[in-house]
Image (cartoon, rainbow, N blue to C red; front, side, top):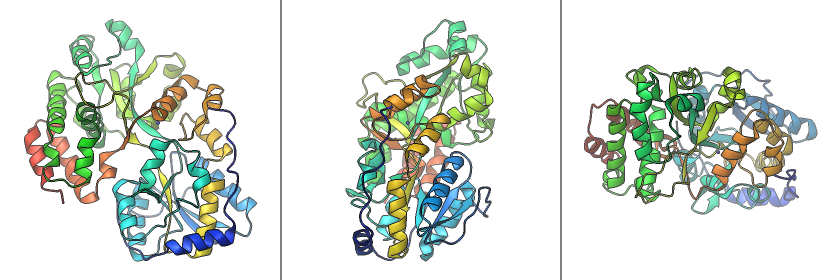
Length: 445
């Protein structure tokens, strides 16, 4: 989803005060969220006053550097680190939190998972303790770590808005401009098909990329209040006219050939959709900012030539939603376990304030083409590699009136899987928008 030099947080609460503040938030455990065996690829440090389970891949190098730096500078406050693959972590943390054996620092995607943690007393309120870090965060991102006005999670890596990437060479060959409205997007489809390219690459085999369309279209048509009603469990919320219209437009795009005939066999994990774009076989792809490092690694010449373009999702004319709203993953988050000792909690929060999104971490994130959710990064972005892209993402996130978390993360897991299953059926024309709504309404409450 930059500035004069990032300043380090001014001060951390005195140890005694912090322990008292966190201990007062104590509580039991229990909880949930969205497979299985530890695969540690980084250096594993077992033991220590506090503990953390970190995830391999992505920004692993930044986290490794961060924990190494902390342990070197704080010999009396060591943090033990264990590394897990993404799916293995999700399975292990669910069991650990529920049994009261979670690590001190708990990684999550916020949303429904964080709400469950808070409801079950599994994480502590860090509103006051983490204030020096909170003061530096972009508000729309920080809000995702809050439940009922209190902060239970702070972002630990980059913002990940969903972006419309496009191939400028393909657009030039077709003689058209990047669509800024849904009608322009629809009108571009036959022109691009005549050029022998897929208008929009879509990794339908993975299913979750399809969420980006229902989210953006629903928000553009009805605004964020529509999905908020779903989160609130309001009866019949999935039957909102904005959702029905969004699903109708999705099927309109499919019927027009927007995604080609084989989108159901394209996998996101293998980079199938982004490969179609940078090889010139597709004109556009709607994907999260997390794919940009893949472009840098796998399509160096494509990026260097300036052919990779990026834009916000088109506006729906007459819609109630602000076209500056964005969807995606505001960031991943750290929370502090309520089951940890007061001393471990103190170490964890001090780490969050001093080390999370520190100067060195910010530089590392920018160097790999990602944007941390901090205010005042304009100067750093201007001097970084690929400043145009980084500035685009930064302004996109900073200026967003609303940043909506991916629906499969925002919803409880009991609703998230039916959402994915039924949305896939909509894309494949197997059910109607109203049938989707009826099925999803049955999951509410």
